Length: 261
Image (tube, rainbow, N blue to C red; front, top):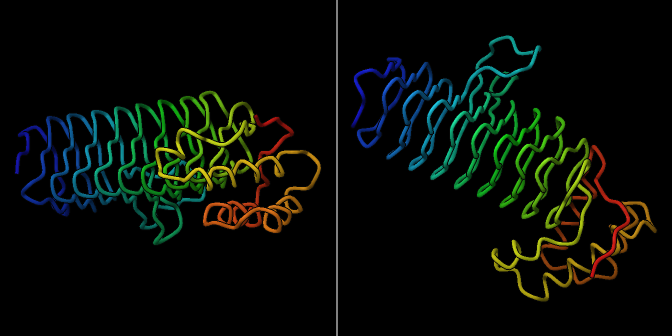
């Protein structure tokens, strides 16, 4: 165990011998650190669990109280997965509602000054660029990339393996697998490069491309478009997830007429 003498650590913290804790770090109550966690100078942690191999950079604040007026100091927490990189000035609030948690999956990258609000759920390998901001209860799918300075309303869902450009903002759900841009981030085709990197076959990408043509044609309601996709496009696991995402929306989905080459 390497702990700088200037660090302040609560007696209740659980810290394995492999952890490194830098100068002026504050580790408050109810913190559990995994093996080989690195907490760099001036970070602040409380009411959180940090998975093995994760690095918390300078001035990050993890597990602090939610920005929610209904929160009455009930016991909640933040959970961060394995091998994440939490960069400078990131804020991840703990949940509101007794027993709840704000959850970040494995191998996530939260770039400088990004914010994850209370009760959010991020799946594995999500990337949030600088100053990206999630309101409370947002859900972000596996491998999504959220551009810098983008902002999302409470309860919004951001679909898996999509990419959303910087300066975007949305009050509605973002479709999986798309390239989204604007306020709101309108789909401009599928995230071809990202999907190739994730190992989707040409056939799977082609099915998604055809599905998006139907969904974003402007000729049908979003639910009717989902029915047509299900009836006319081969239902591999990705088109199935796309249809299910549409049918389970509660805030509506960003989709406007656009052309696909």
